[in-house]
Every structure is written in structure tokens, then in C-alpha cells.
Length: 113
Length: 114
Image (cartoon, rainbow over all chains, first blue to last red; front, top):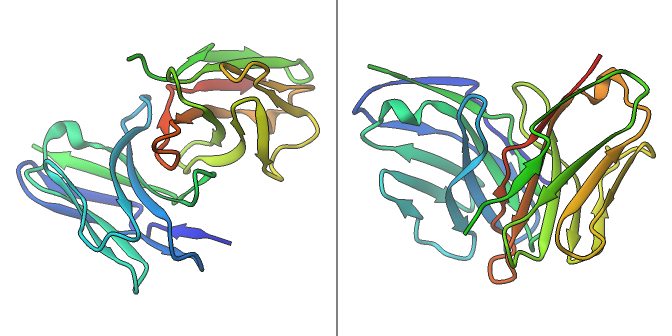
């Protein structure tokens, strides 16, 4: 069974600094997708970034980028120039073939001004 | 393009009552998913549809839970004889034929069972 592990329950970052959130996963599939979702307090889940496993190039979306290490089954999220609005719970998720997503337990990100 | 919508946003019910939630996916999205999320945890998959066909159900979905998507558009999730353990956020997501792997989530329905 596929599993997703986020080993950092909580992280803090100073405004304008850079922070990296970790995620590892376990799968026997060769073609799959990985995602980072952001869930602000009492607000809905927002897609931050997606990575296709067959692509070696790391995905980027403005201040958000990933470090995808397929052999190590690692998928970390880097947030550059952190802003107060980045404070949220971040979930790493894994999916195959348009089926269900498997989520990690989440990392709470606090941004200090 | 409107996002995924869910109704109601909050539901408080007494143990033993039946409740029904509705989800309207993004227009033209053919896949629709239901997840349950408890406080401080990641969402857990319940079931999903491609058009009107229910393709997978989790073992979490006991006999008290039923989901439908009769015309391949909106979906309903019904919980019969609610229990306190059913208290959670129920999330709906949808994905398009072009990008079936990328799911977009609605705001959720928060259920509280007293």
C-alpha cells in the first residue's frame, strides 16, 4: 500500500526567509503524481504544486519549488521569500491514474514577522 | 470558472439522525471524490466517481455511508444513524478528463454529531 510520511509536525520561518518542508513516500509504481496542498486555518485546501514522476525536472510555481528525488522517494517543498499568508497546514499527497490521493499527516507552517 | 462547492458548510445533528451532504464539482470535471478529515490530520479517501459510476469505495465507508452521482454532475453523501465518531470535515474534490490526477477541493462540510 502506498504511504506518505511528513516527519515535521511543525515548522517556523521568519518572514522573507526560506523554508523547506519534507515528504517521503512509499510505492511500487513507476508512474505517479505528487502534490503539495496548502490548507489555511478554517479554509479550503489549495493546490500549491504538482510533480509528474516521469519528469526529472523539478516543478516550480513562483516562490514554491520542489526537490523531487525519485530513487530516494523524497519530495520536499521549498518556499522562498516567505510571507505571512504562507502560514497554513501543508499536506504532501500521492496519486496514481486519477484514483484516490493518499495524504501525509501534514506540517503546520508558522511565519514570524 | 467557479470552484467546487459544497452544501451545507456546517451541520450539527444528534446521534442517530441521518444527514446528507451535496457537492457540485467544477464544470466539465468528470471525476468526483469524497474524503473525510479529522482535526489535525490529512484527508482520508472515502469514495470516487467517474461520471455516474462509483469506481472505488474505501473500507472506511461503512454500510451507514452511501454516495451517489446520479447524472454525473453533483454528488450526495448520506450518513445514516450518525455516531459521534462521524464528526469530521467531509471534503469533496473533482478533476478534469485532461488532468485526471489533479484534484481541486471544495470548502468542505463540517459535521458535528452531538
